[in-house]
Image (cartoon, rainbow, N blue to C red):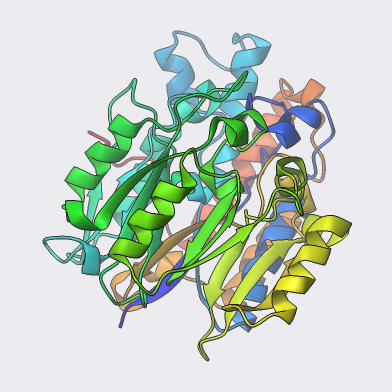
Length: 421
């Protein structure tokens, strides 16, 4: 029973606006603002509740230990002695962006008929480069069943940012699909974070059929405009690709290759004349969850910012009024995480699998979300001012909050102690 499972990153108690992500316009714009970790996590839980209400299968990935004392130790320092930039990088809650956790190839696409997951190395940004050991430990617990193969990261310097630069298209989730790896070459003043060499290595590790695998260059214009990941300008689901006109360096070649391999593919392209790259990126129009409901209705789960942009919302209304494959819009409020540079799609990792093969501690229902919300309400800091990230009291609160969460989930001692070699 293969279904698409959305595993959302539960926003951690150290969520703050330090502006560490060069090229992420929202994160940079809000650098130095006071964050609200409790509200951010509760908004994320509310989004998961909304997914459950739509009949979707929902899971979670847990916040990492922060500050990352092991990473600081490898730099021959500790949190008290570290410089302010190192403190901020060690405290980052950026593992909340579960779309960057790994690249996932479902069993129908792989030679050994197992679902393969490769943890992302995230080497381009220092504050994210130390996430992969904690992510890999969680993936090894969540996907310990023989139905899965969990791989370590591609070695540096070949940057890999996970599913945010990967799309899968298929006639249905259970059918063999076309896997699309989007890489960057240039991005104006901003770094291109996904290397083609990393994508090619993952495709080999996942035992993908080269005839059903595409490597597509993201356009320099998109990266330079602030599309630091492909999922800021394109999203796919089933046989549908929803993309901005300027998302890809050679869109005509890509579309021809896609249709050659998947003749029933449907491409919905938003023209730049109707929605500029600036509007698409600021509204996170494409950083939406494009999902198929149990009744077959394809739905776009969008952030409130998309509804607030008149040009974006107007184009979406025209799309829905037509006879295209996307029939429904759902709006969620994730403002606190959006301010740190990611929308609904950034918060989730998609895994096509049988839910019975996943460790149940990583799956949620409404009752479990009630328990998680109670822990967040009780333990997460209400606010964090970036000027206070050196406060011993704040650090103690953050560490106690995560400890309470792990105890409630029943995973104490498992995801911080696994070997990562």
